[in-house]
Image 1 (cartoon, helix red, strand yellow):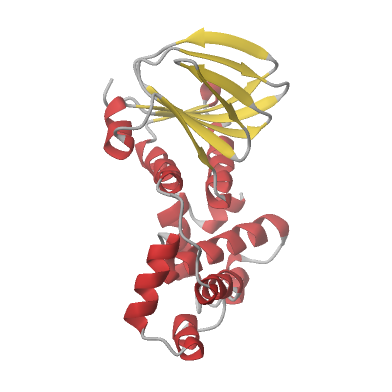
Image 2 (cartoon, rainbow, N blue to C red; image 1 turned 180 degrees about the vertical axis):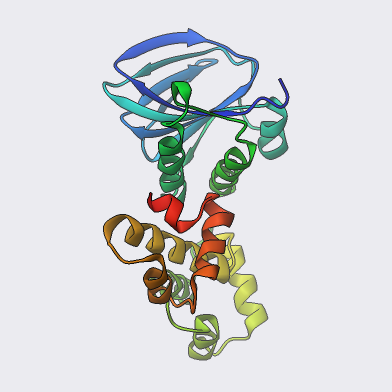
Length: 245
């Protein structure tokens, strides 16, 4: 089943089960928790922790009352391409963007029979990319204060044009040195941090305001909606209007 890929929204009352399957599975909790055991390793999945079980791994699991999960059934090949060498059961901390994306996919499944979204390799790949980012995090040395300051500015000031250039002037630092140090500290470029902050802000405004997509794009510093639409399609696989609906 190398090409097998589906995405399902699943709700559980308290349940305990044991099984195995010939595909890998990524489990992203939306509400409640799941305790899952593979080869004597017991992990707890919550709204902040997702889990991946590799193919042919017998696993025992128990869920809490009224729990909700996004479950990705994935080919072993797709998992090996991104997570080769990891244990049969491993967990990662979920980011805000991944949690928002998981809820978006869960909502998209409700119009399909059985709450399953078939033939969804593109959407599953995006979710795996977000999970993969979390697994690359390792213990880091103490991050210099100037880098922490720069990251906070990029995350909170999402409308200032050419913000990186402004920061370079404030820090009296060359662009190459700053980018090299920033990426080493956070495993992301300044542009990636800024784009993620804009994406999160756009998601929150789409959910919590009646502003039009054009108004939201302008609030985030875009001259038109095309850039915001491109950002959504690239990271969430849908337009802002479709995501809101």
